[in-house]
Length: 225
Image 1 (cartoon, rainbow, N blue to C red):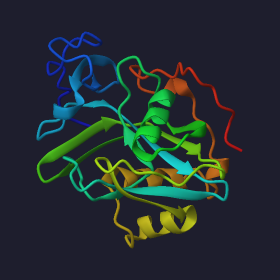
Image 2: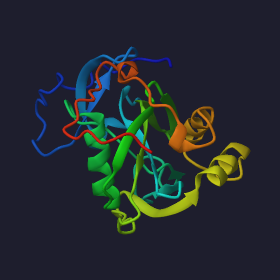
Image 3: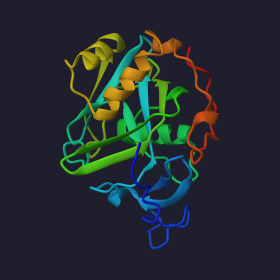
Image 4: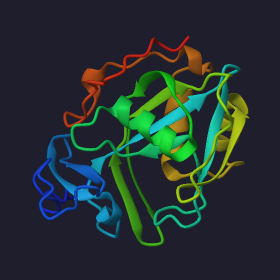
């Protein structure tokens, strides 16, 4: 990955100078993953988006189906694009597992179990209509239990959500038969290299995460079975 880090764009990490208490912040990072500041999530994406922390999660049901989502049509970045289950940004000092659970509840009305880190070093840069996404974006998997209610998409974030067989989804994405977000396409290529069965993907070492990302979660679920 190349380009400037935008280190001067945000306030000092955790300071939030001039930012309202309720405004969501993202963590800006250097190319080697060190925290260099914060910026409001609402304004961080543009033609010169600074490198920042994010995450992606792939949620599976008890039968191994994958939940895929369509980004809301009104989103500033990649509106209407189909992608993985959920993406988001850890708040300053927020463990990535807690950020995943928060986002799944807020966007989809779902409780997530058995979170597992699988691609700790994933990163990408993508552009659509002059708006850039540039993120250090570790990938996790999680499980939605069969007793859970159907997803309840938050309409400002998610246009649609569907369960699909992982094997068919991955094959269609890699063959170009299913159009998905840039990051999802790149992630699927790396995930399939881990093996055919998502339940058997090896858990990664949290030490391989960006230095700015914490895994000190308040919840410690059991490994995915």
